[in-house]
Length: 437
Image (tube, rainbow, N blue to C red; front, side, top):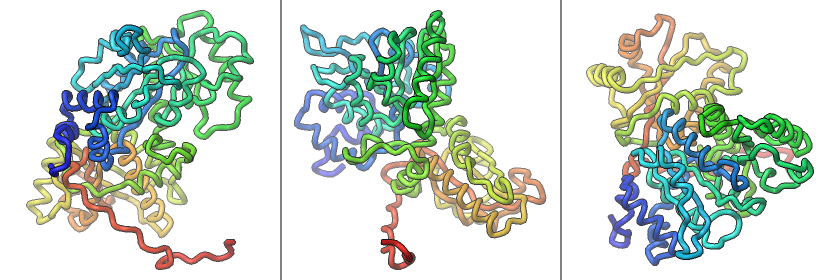
């Protein structure tokens, strides 16, 4: 710890719940320590996926969040929740209604719920909400849910904080024209009609889908889903759609300059992830959930295949199988550039690749790297693995026609051991421009 670093910072980065709570309080009350904490955690930001949940009072936002917490936990996520409640007219603090409805999962070791008062701040959020999200991001939560106070159309401020915005609608929106005009609906990436067991729910879903035809086309398109939060019906589909949206737009919306419009272009999202990439040399022991690996590979595979189809094959390893492979490689003289990674992705091919095939394979690997970074995972390329093909083939039982390309060591990076990224070279060293103004 440096002489000027606040004593809360290191425990916060290690995930200490008391330090997290105290840091959030510092931002909420604008304590003198807030500026020092913000400066210290700034380099650690941009890994978490922030989900904003808004909608009219009574739509069932808090109950839906409780159901989402259960589904996200089942998929191996660590989730932070910032629930912005109305201010108490007596104490000025949060009314805490949301925490009551999230009590089922709020005590889980992988969940941290903080209710904060709006303190009269317009826009549905507390003035310090973004900073509180920063604290949870720096503390290693890979998913952060922000629930607005439920004030109505003024809640479009969630656009500045959330990467994926969910608008929860009650059955029976009323006048269709009002639904079309409502600014709160215009910000939605996903529209959820909750209380789907109501006889009005399906009609409301149809009305919303019709409304979307009148809007400017969005990429990815806005989905309309129906849930019954009290039973969990439809909730897995919402989490699936959240994952799809994250893969398309990436993370870090709140960290962009205020004048920069949120991008919905997948290439731009990948570029942001790559620009923030740091090679991870040492990893924390936290396991990588299988669901996270599947999502990373799905994003990497999407839209790359060219003339030789999909020439890549991937073996995802963790636990004892990975440890046995490491031991075999060490005995064969392989010096891994990574330390303690909880998972490896071993890439092989069974094709005789031409130049186009290798180009496709390279783009696939780069997309996998970007997708892993967008999920808050660090990665280290085991690029010297190919000469140890026989060792890998024996350990994994590869088909005789398969050859080893490389491997990626992935996991939560140890912040103290990240390799600095190389400074980009001047464009003049490798690029020429012809025909541009």
